[in-house]
Amino acid sequence: MKILVVGSGGREHALAWQLARGGHVVLVAPGNPGIEAVAACVAVATDDLDGLVALATARAVDLVVVGPEAPLCAGLADRLRAAGVPTFGPGAAGAALEGSKAFSKQLFARAGIRTAAFEVCATVDEADLAIARLLDRDGVVVKADGLAAGKGVVVAADAAVARAAARDMLGGRFGAAGARLVIEQRLRGREVSVLALTDGERLEVLAPAEDHKTLHDGDLGPNTGGMGTVSPAWIDDATLARVTDEVLAPTLAGLAAEGIDYRGVLYAGLMIDEGGAPWLLEYNCRMGDPETQPVMARLRGDLGAVLHGAATGALPAGALSWDPRAAVCVVVAAAGYPGTPRTGDPIGGLAAAGDVPDVVVFHAGPARRGDAVVSAGGRVLGVTALGADVDEARARAYAAVERIELPGKQFRTDIGLRGRAR
Ligand code: AMP
Ligand code: GLY
Image 1 (tube, rainbow, N blue to C red):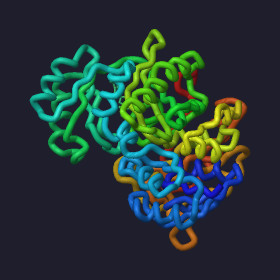
Image 2 (image 1 turned 90 degrees about the horizontal axis):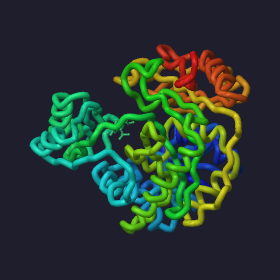
Image 3 (image 1 turned 120 degrees about the horizontal axis):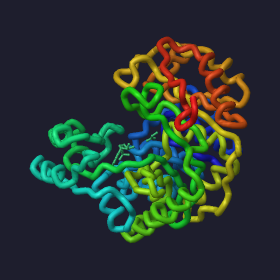
């Protein structure tokens, strides 16, 4: 097949790499210089919906795979399907699972899915009342309704912090994304993500991967887009089965009841309580970044055929399997990340890093300057390694990270160690 991947980060590099391994011809828009090793990059931006539809039709692609949430929420998949192009990714109505927390929480409640008690508010007075009702000794959580680049959630220990967050968001900190808020009860438990592919009826649950969200070792420091991932994750088969039966399947039923034909990724952010029951925090409507990198490294089977099946309402059963080895992805970030990352630093040592056995370096934020490759974003590389176990995968990933030359590079040294003796 000829497959167009939309996006330009490490997730899209990992997807393009796996699709190319399956023998498909891969185009990526806009891509990045690292992705050119496995695919043809075409300079059409992810917010240029007209340009992307024109590209897909002009090149007669068999499938479009949309990486990021913003074009999905803007209706790219609807536009492509209307032009007759099979597309992996929900339309705008389905993408509202990620694009509107008020919509998604209301859907969870209607579908009978376990989720934190919540209220939707549009004014400071409503927010103050909701905070007073939902605050308990664990605190309360204040969320902007819309997309806020991962910064729209404040887990508040007390009412003062919650009220300040509500004023900040309603006052325009995230623009229209903060015009409505979801205020919810704070849950306790262990967090996990579960990702599944769906054609709207059937589900194919992906190998679990665990993210490390903060900048520094020990889960300290500011939040980031994700500093590294390990797959498999701690979740056991029994919990995964409960998530499938009690969360994912009812979500599909709830979407169908709304008349939404959802073809793409359901990425559930969950809290597992002491009794092992899953509580649904939120959905993303796309794959995780950097969760995708170790999952693609472990994937066996024809990803292109499976995504095409999901896009056309015929997801094949059991077409994917997983390398029993572990995979670890260590993100190498630019100096200054996650505040204002410094760009334009030369990236060296890529070939040497790639020479470490079972390592692949996915590129998240590079640019070309003359003959050189320089940093162009916060997260620059996702150094991904397979190993017989997590220790071996870690050893290989970190051996490769040591070979990367990037002035001021930042990375965590404890990816994959969480919950284990150090
Ligand atoms: P979300 O974007 O909804 O996943 O929220 C981001 C993060 O905030 C989650 O990964 C959790 O760590 C935390 N969070 C969100 N909702 C809750 C909740 N109701 N109780 C406790 N923590 C939460
Ligand atoms: N790694 C978190 C995300 O993709 O949202």
